[in-house]
Length: 129
Image 1: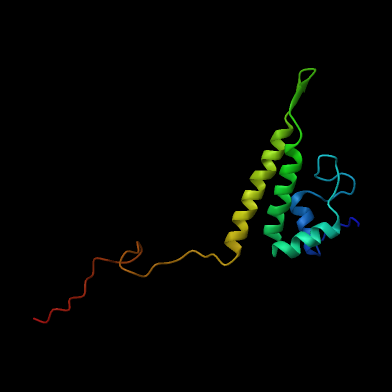
Image 2: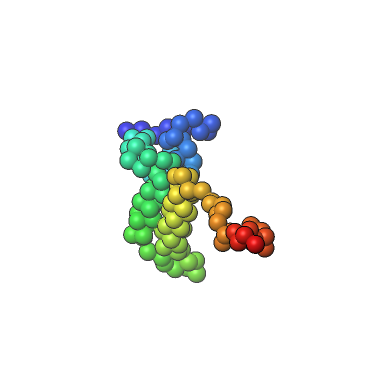
């Protein structure tokens, strides 16, 4: 089980690492500064089916990992580790939204009588005089 990262973002694992800030070996996003292994990320990519959904999954996992750590104050300095958990949860939500848009969702242009862009003033009469 290893760690690799190519700054050209040549692989999906590289792009996933970039998205979650897991780009430096030994200084990863986990609470213990650990990194995800290439194999873990490849498995997540395979199960989630897209980089966006995989990024959301990893952010959720990081949120859970960080939620186990408490906030504390020492010598007048406040450390709010719960904020890290919340921010990863927010990122997961944003990536899930992004994945939904990319999964085939498109804006729809209505072409019925209720569409706001239509000229509804002109009427066609079917009455024969």
